[in-house]
Length: 128
Image (cartoon, rainbow, N blue to C red):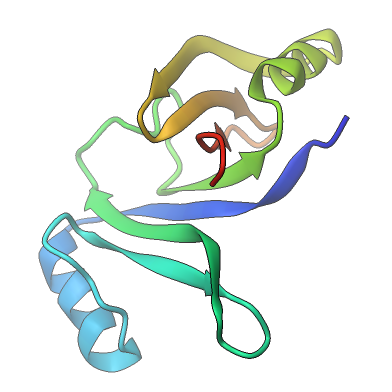
């Protein structure tokens, strides 16, 4: 079974998300949008767009979206078969969170790594 097939997004916390977003926009040229992040569109070696994006987002340091982790970041990994991978991780003794989410953006599940970091697993919608 394929496990991780790529990185779907990088999410991190900041004490002042708007100011930090402005810094990244000004100094690194990241097109930070009003929702607090950017979507990097995928392209092949010649620059031709291909299906897929990688999300990059700054959230409030006071938010709890990374709970139960206390880390200031969370990596979202693309996966081919979320339910199969979650079952495999459970059988391997990993700390898989019970909650899953199925939305227009795809299917999401979470596992806590041995250092206590919350890892998001994302199965994109079909065709993406």
